[in-house]
Image (cartoon, rainbow, N blue to C red; front, side, top):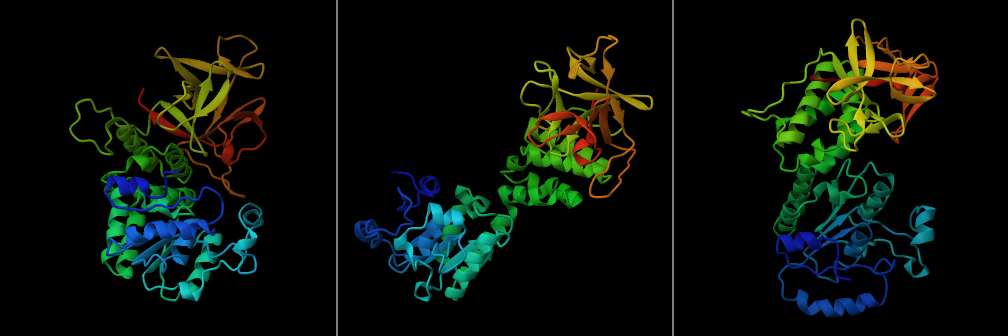
Length: 419
């Protein structure tokens, strides 16, 4: 096996590394490890400082073998304390899949302690929190760095060759306190971690999430596309802003995302071909669901389906509602012309005016969003129904036509589009 954790970073930044990759699930606890250390020992002796980095299973091994490797510093990301059920709580699935009799007593011990061990984990992950606390209790000299919203994959929230090179340089030359501060700073500004935070917060704090996304600091980030291309998060955020009455902010978010998708800038300046800004009060709207995708029409199967918000991706036609006086009609655009959609024999088809066709009803009088809450807004929210019931949007992007409820999954946020 020629691949291992961190290989890409080492190649890009020309960092000399030795990688360990387990071909079988043995947690690096086999006699072959003695042979491996015998091979690499003469190589390690050529270097003044050895930095050991590991993730999860590898982080446990990084700590356990640090003294043997004469490590100057260790970065243990989401480390496991042990898989021995006599040493800590271990989910049954780990026991069934990973634990072997020779692993008894494998837990981190005080004799594994070192002043330059950094333990990085997400305290919001209950399993990692338990293991981290056991490790810190066994290693009083270790330095903790709490990686909130990083989940078990802590490495994703500091990923990137430049970031990892900076961390490795700090492990080699700075104090553990300086390195933990650096890791925390990288995590807070990292697009992957921002996405994780948005996932957790868009439903409860839509305005704060909006302010985070449109912040100039985010748009200047060289990896901002990870945030702006995340259709699910931005779609959910648009919907949540609307149902909380932040119509202007919702429309501004949509405009900025569309600008980025086209120009790779959140606020392009001096573009001769700039599209006109999205207007809040317009006659035509697309529809964003509470799950973050947009409502579209599948002509082949004659039903509604979901597509990516802001940039439809699978050839389906976005559903458009057009304001007519005090009401709305439901359409799709074909060859530049709006064609009405109707219900006929339990399928959604283009309207021809036949007697057996039923028009959809677009109701803007309000929806129940949340337990026991009645929310009514004259702004950008509707429910669509027919004689069968309410249109209901599912997380799978499938659309039902016969819901008896008028709650969150039946609520649709209007996205203004320039006619």
